[in-house]
Image 1 (tube, rainbow, N blue to C red):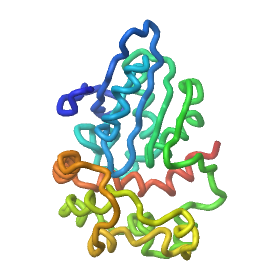
Image 2 (image 1 turned 45 degrees about the vertical axis):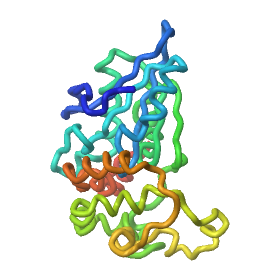
Image 3 (image 1 turned 60 degrees about the vertical axis):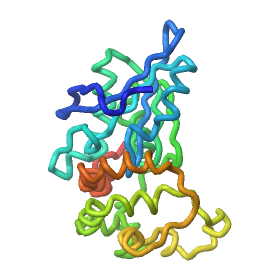
Image 4 (image 1 turned 180 degrees about the vertical axis):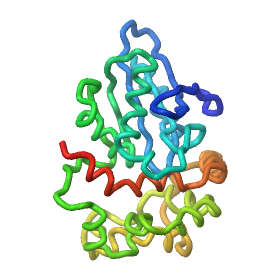
Length: 254
């Protein structure tokens, strides 16, 4: 497994990208696989998959994405749009002289990798999205749609004009990871029966007031890795990804 304390730093797309690599054993022509984490996660989230894929003969790369631990975190919000997020991954390929890769994305990483074949069609060997399906470009600005359906308190809408969540999450990362990194107690049937406004909660209010429910998916030591990292980096860069929903919609008319 890579040493997650010592990434390789790669200059790409105007930033330094922190990358972890695991080379395969016994494969002369390994397919490269790029593992793209979600929010609030890290390359460390792939700690179980990296050695398994390398053992299976793949050359594995897991970057900390733009704004995350060790990777460059520009101040301008537009620096986190989908063109830069996908461009960072293409820059990784270019750095290692790789024509193509299999891209695997989880959560926000899924939203990113689904756009790679649309924005960089010649660079994709294969693709898998975990937790997030491909979502075609809607006819309306997605923030307008979210606001109309879920209201101003819906977390993605709230992120557009307020930094209250950034500030609270950054000051209380232990609550963020204690509450979010758990298995859901609700069944899919129970979730489907909820009214729309309850399916996407006020995330800030939940982090502030909710009690932890469900089985933790992290050990105390694993959880501490996330807490320590985000206490240092804060949450504004990852939340800036959400602040580009409208910009991404305007600039991706395929």
